[in-house]
Length: 250
View 1 (cartoon, one colour):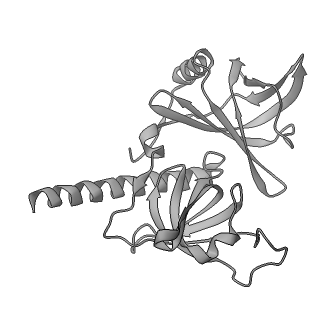
View 2: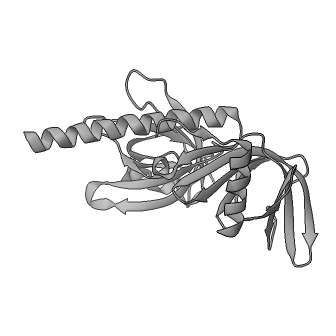
């Protein structure tokens, strides 16, 4: 699980054909005015130099020559690639997004996108920050960043425990920056994300922030961060297995 596999040209076409036949969920991501946009869609057809996505509506702000990232889920794998928009056209009641045919498609195990707990012997501090949104105020908070503790991690997101008195600074859908050091001897990971959910745990004087990472399939820098995440998850899995084995033999 520590690395993805680049598909050969005939495998890329097989993947595209299977995506069409199985109506695979495809997430298109791109940046517009400094913000990441995510859009769920499907592949309807492809040719020698293009791929076509078709749906009822097209993403707001998507323009010709726009770089985009694609993540498609199919079977036990996710497929990721980067490409550019050729055109956005109306076809009767539908919108079609024409993309350049990808030069490279990477296949990754879906298991890497499942949440894996941080080993119990690690206390991983997480820092995150945003524009200073307060649900009940238009004023910016005095703090520049907030701190929590990483609970679990996947290639697609994380769950972080935060002190309950900071809850008013967060809302679902909010864009945040996230930074954490998986292990003390490693370099910090810095990611962009948005808040997927908030869970109150008043009995523990904390709440849980679930975040989804953004843009990891859209460009070489994001892909390198994605590969680092997968390696970290692999290490966490090994540590958890070892801990469980030791607990059983103790």
